[in-house]
Structure formats: C-alpha cells, structure tokens
Length: 96
Image 1 (cartoon, rainbow, N blue to C red):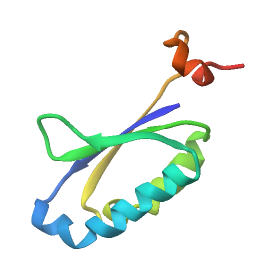
Image 2 (image 1 turned 90 degrees about the vertical axis):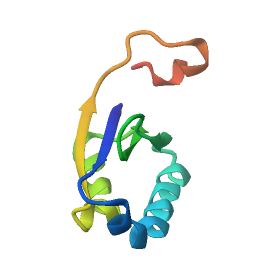
Image 3 (image 1 turned 120 degrees about the vertical axis):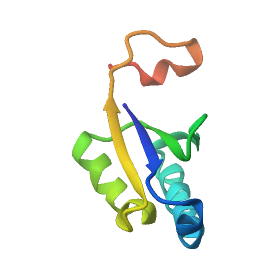
Image 4 (image 1 turned 135 degrees about the vertical axis):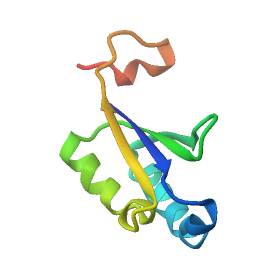
C-alpha cells in the first residue's frame, strides 16, 4: 500500500486548466480499484491518495500519467507501508 502526496509547486491558477483531466485520472484509479481514497492535503495546497494493490513501479507509472505530474505542477512524495493491524472493515488491506 502507498500513501501519495501531491504538493502543488506552482499556483492554483496554473493548475486550473488541468483540473478536469486530473479528476478524470483520479476516477480511472478508482474505477480500476487501486485508489481507495483521495482528497486535499490539510494546511497546504495539494492532495493525497491512498493506493492499494500495485507494486511501486506500477504506482510510479500511474502517477506519471497524472496531468498535474506530467506538467510539473506538483511534487510527488510516495510512502509505502504494509499494514500490520486494521479496523475490521479494512481486513482486506492485510497481507495474506
């Protein structure tokens, strides 16, 4: 599992023309079943995504297709972790 931070490096105005394509890219991740959650970063410009079911290389390939990443509008931080304990609703995240 990976936590992705996309920190805006420019202005919101620079990102605006790419917002619809970014939202389409996010939806594709949900449709493919690999994005579990996405939203705004608190206290700063940018967003976060929880990714499950992909190896790091595949996550990086998918991130490269994000219009914000492809156009140099965000700095990407990728943090991988393996859950050792979860709420019962999230048991599917535990390694088998």
